[in-house]
View 1 (cartoon, rainbow, N blue to C red):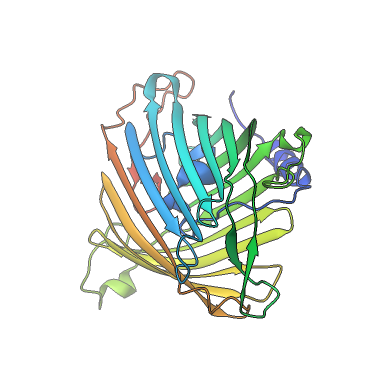
View 2 (view 1 turned 30 degrees about the horizontal axis):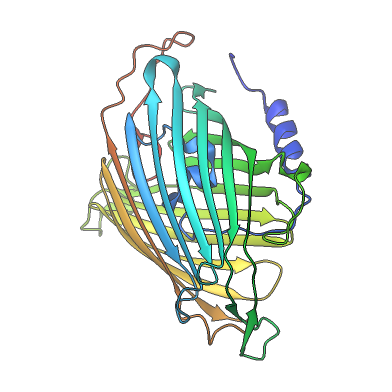
Length: 343
């Protein structure tokens, strides 16, 4: 494959978005890189020769055991094949464990260049899902707005299915962007009482690292900034799944291995807004962070929502030192851990 034409990309994106008749909703992490391969399978192999990561998220913390999500992943970049492979496992518990989904994903991504500085990675992923409903009653905030709780009896059941995901990731020193569609083929599966009809999910994301000080710095800022290697990264993530549409937009500031960010998270179908604050440490091999989001305006669940907690830890090891690529004769450049894009 010598190149990927703009016309092909436009047709692919249009075709992916057209495949979105869906109903159910899944967990949405507030930080895109808390669970990279869950958001986009094209992240497989982007963090180094070998990479392992984990994340946990607990929403509605004012009520015990409403929800909890645990996630682990591992991936590697195969230099001789210009390919990334990765696996992930995720367990999503809801309503005190009454509803539970366990997922296992296997991803493959191929990396090639559109230009000297532009890399693109198409990817495919197969995912096994096990949905379970345990026999007990459960409480959930009254979404009608009375501020009370509603109890639902639940009988035992379980079901499993396999579906697929596809993704694209574009990397450039000035930006990183991607698009992914999950649950391809799930529309043919039967609906169930446990989770409703399988839902196809569209994720679009982008980041734009701006170097304020350090290599390639903006000279006017260097006159008064004492810190070196300061990077400002505006970012946005759009998630659509059935009737649910999320937009998470904000910016992060990184310097000296430390990172801090703020964002706004809102479901576009109603006027509720959550503020997101993140803190973390970053290096070439280790990335760790904490994310806190809380309902700031709108909605009738503020009495239940004292905030959502999200923790993530990623470790990369082994240098990516490629032989010359067979088709281009160019070597793969190392990645900038501040943005996941080439230096």
